[in-house]
Image (tube, rainbow, N blue to C red; front, side, top):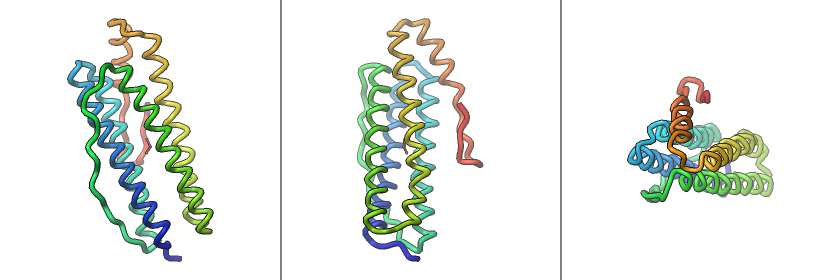
Length: 173
Ligand code: FEO
């Protein structure tokens, strides 16, 4: 069944939100690079790729329901932060906002009685649990390190290990 206009518009908005997330994480990655934390920069770059894959998942879904994809302009993200701690505090807060957006989409799919979209969105509901959890984990680790240069170096090396697998649209941490 063709997707209805209300649901289609809301999903198009979410594509924009996912691409904005990618843009935000790329800006954070650039900032991390500028303060000589290449491992954190890598993690954030992988996160940006993951966000693009989220956007593309919705993009493909709209087509599979004979809908129209409309790409809007992407807002400019923040470019400076006070510290790497602040970057990850913001990451965690941002993911909580994205979770809210996903939950609102689920509510809308129920209002519209669009079972296929409701089911499609379940993947995102689960994904957001993971997204919040991994951001919070890094926030906690950074708090423990508390700007200690040695601890930060060890953490940076850990963050350097994250890779993104394009073929499977998955990642390993
Ligand atoms: Fe696409 Fe980080 O949620």
